[in-house]
Image (cartoon, rainbow, N blue to C red; front, side):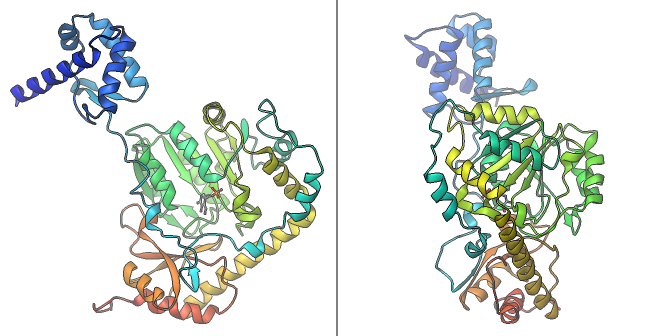
Length: 460
Ligand SMILES: Cc1ncc(COP(=O)(O)O)c(C=O)c1O
């Protein structure tokens, strides 16, 4: 075993020496030589690197140079040092494919009644026609050098923000915010607490960052306090919460629960992201943890569900450090969200006529969800939650339920991609946002599907 390990170390030393041949032998040169071996596939994730002393001897250079090279490689995330076990090539998380989100197929037009999408009803969105006409006649900001967030929009958002944020910015939707915040706040091997179930891309984002996902249960008032207390003993770096209209369950956090959770979190270092993805059409009041922990909460408010997904805008406000980090990192990429779209959003936010449209939309979503919930209850199926665009339907067998519905032209999202493990049992996520009528008939189909079990006998 030891001989094998030695010969493996020798092989890696030879590889590094060969990669370094003829190039600069400074710490940066050594780091680049090792980097080339990793990107070329000669060194693989979890390969153990030689000790500093041994590699220095093999290359005929000082141990300080190797130690500095290792430090450069660590900073770039190429290698990791695991205490006394040694230094290893970092195992890269899987690429974009293979996540939960790909298991929630969204194929427009496949079903006569598509309840799988999680999206708002286009007929309930405010119209932007008249705004476009007036904006078209005004000069449009075109400079790279202008403020990333339009001043008038920023002022309006600050006035509306549910707590006093240390920083505020605007990005391209809640998922853009989550993606950027998770990559700034979460490192390889960290632990991240999410609601179980949770929105499928949230689980994916955390796993792609190389972190362990810890799921905590929800009841009708939000995250279960005891479950969170248990999860916090594992010192997670981040908690991701949907404060209202939770996708998929429809749960909204009560003010009492927010206070209890904040008290638990107070004595920890865990950062908190709040994903208020449904905003003005959530159908429930917002109770934010930011009110209690403004230095640790980053609150994300999406405008997609209320004003239109194609606005692609969300505001991010709260703790300074992660938001500063997000803004700085974004300067190396798109830098800002289109100010033209920001101007449209600002007009939508400040038009009282639009407020009335949103109130109608929120009422319609609440009514659609509650009528379907009641029709299911009549058939003996209880679904929890009371807000939002979706409901979480318990079924006997997820796949059979989907097949049973598909055979009647109804599409539904499978529940498993939303779950962390299997604690919650099989479910389907049903989007109620676009169901306008036929609630009883639909509930009948859903109830049949919930009990569908193929050739197996049904539970007693
Ligand atoms: C929980 C949750 N977060 C984020 C999003 C995406 O929001 P956005 O369109 O702002 O990216 C959704 C969309 O359904 C969602 O349900």
